[in-house]
Image (cartoon, rainbow, N blue to C red; front, top):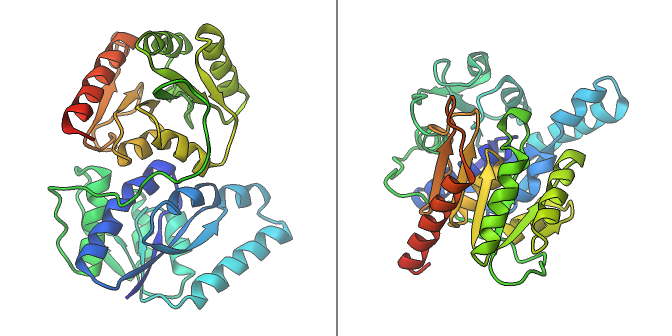
Length: 324
């Protein structure tokens, strides 16, 4: 059975889909998966050894030049590639109109969430098969249930296996164990205050951990440099490919992150991971993993560096006790 997964973005959503792939491989011997994803996240999909061809879509870039010839040429090439792959089933695990449209390009039966379950109910109109998956479940479990119903097995939700490991690339010159601070987010309202990151870095350094930061834009670079100035022991990783950042994260002793995709990736790697949720709710999208924790700010009660450090100490101790 040859299946195309359509989960184009975001990075956290992509990571959340890996356990469903592992379920299917465990239950359906010989099943083959390809994936259609936003070009920016192709490196993340490539971490899973069970994924064959990765088809890249560029909706975010195409929207900026809808009438240009290169945009239409790229879209036509994607359609030919998907249709030519002759899939037995296409699984739209995203439940958005844009993902449903991409799924239809493959000219194969399309399975997805039903109207009451999809993030954008209208997307279900474009599916051949529709499945009810209650919204009250965690994002990971929703995807696992969808795959199980569409392919024909019952996932064992009592355990979670992502099936990935950090890539063997990238290098980092840092003294001793490192703590990766993922301060960058896609939305300004998700950001934790700069002074909180700086104080956290100071306390980590005092514990013998080298704070590591990176950046994706000028504002994030300014914060990374502010942390570096306040804590000279810290290391700033230049803007790099996601695979290289993933490799460095994978070698960390601790990861602390705002609500961002790389934080979810750290949890999937089995690392002690503290997620900081400033405005978003962690309930259905909290990091999952044996050594993860989600701290949620509330009105008048922001998440403090002291809280984060306490959680970090607890998770590191738990991982050491488990012998990981």
